Image (cartoon, rainbow, N blue to C red; front, side, top):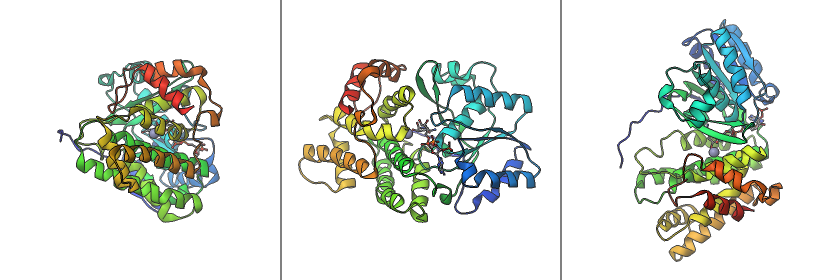
Length: 389
Ligand code: NZQ
Ligand code: ZN
């Protein structure tokens, strides 16, 4: 096992009514808050009103960035950073799903930086230039990305048709509220996309060519089984508290580094390949992953890495047979499960053709070849898009 430093500093307030804690927590950082939220779900389900009531009760002044897009944009980041700079904001409170939290993190970065966050960090990767950020906290309303507990942020730049992720420890939220009841209003489509995204995060960390990571992969299997068990229940009854609670906590555990501490390598190719699909077609991240993942699995499966598929097939889907049979069947099972949740099975089902494959593949590999199960070049990425057609 590799050396690692365990550091997951986000304080989580999990469960019904935990929102009441935010006043006291915010006051530890100051009295000026920037609220960041999406297109209206937090107004429809009462979370916005509740937050405003708590802020007022505690004498906390607030400013707002409303209307964050799913697949959040650079423009919104500059707009929010400007408000922070002009008003000396002490803390940014995101209310929503991954898009809102990611946007809040990017605002936090740009608000304390004189250069350009997109050029220097998302494209340039110059982490050493980050001295300070405005702290971010979140009220999670959609279980999917893990952004509520990690240092990642993914932003789209429509001027160049690119969607790029960036990660820095200073971007880990200082606290997050996870009240499963807030996810009762999440649509079937987004519940499916969230479940697939969580599973994809787990796959990206489970599938690596090395043979290490015994303990980490058993943890991952437990989390995968949780989603496989509870996602259909949440779809059947969106107000099932246990289902929503298990999915929500799994989303955080799946992408807060816990399951990869000590592992030799992770993969993350499917995410890079998907991000370029959402950049060009503005599709829902989890839906793109649901289409691409089985194609990626088929493409990378080889004699060198088949042991991972055999573990996956046996331990998750109770499969038996030769290694090859188990591996191939496990890929079919993955496709069948995603389809059962309501995820489209091909790019053509969502009206995507091959016209942008070259451009998307080039953007997917802009930092170099992808993955660890199999090193993927631009040409490989084009083949995976074709397999998903
Ligand atoms: O905009 P509002 O009105 O809030 O509606 C949102 C949006 O339309 C809606 N929604 C959220 N909570 C709801 C709700 N509707 C009803 N009731 C609720 N309680 O759901 C829609 C999608 O929201 P979004 O935030 O876009 O979804 P998600 O959480 O899946 O985030 C996706 C974004 O996160 C990035 C993705 O690429 C994508 O841009 N990712 C971020 C990661 C990270 N930071 O670690 C990792 C992921 O792999 C991912 O790349
Ligand atoms: Zn994801």
